Length: 164
Image 1 (cartoon, rainbow, N blue to C red):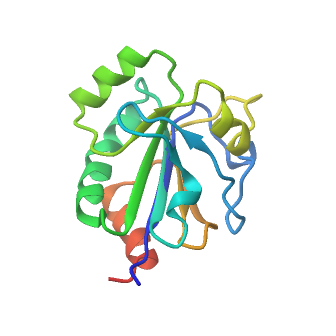
Image 2 (cartoon, helix red, strand yellow; image 1 turned 45 degrees about the horizontal axis):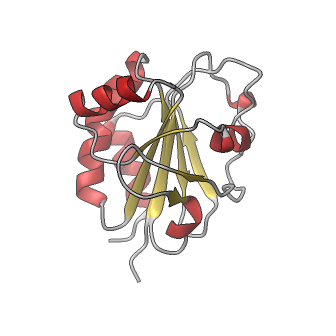
């Protein structure tokens, strides 16, 4: 059976891990969001199928922008076993769509208008730094949480989670 990893990235300012509600080793709370393109996605649909990387970001965050080329490359290379879900803190859909197009983002990007995701993952009373990358294993548990992740580190983490 192929293993899949889901990565979720969040970009927020003045981050400290104390502001995260979720912790490494815990079950990742389920959420369902509509990406800019495509049908509604839910974290639970990837359990036992793919590793997930949740990437939390903002279109105005310089480290978030610097991280994108590596995320795009890894997404292409690991797509059979990995699902990256971008979640932006921005609210202007047309600006986010333009950003996605300009940066050739090749994974789903979601706006969290209802704050369903953010309310389950972050303490929104504090400002936190972004990007934030949350790695969810096949079993649905959070296996790693990182801020900015360069391509080399990203590959190292994913190679440990995905058995080729």
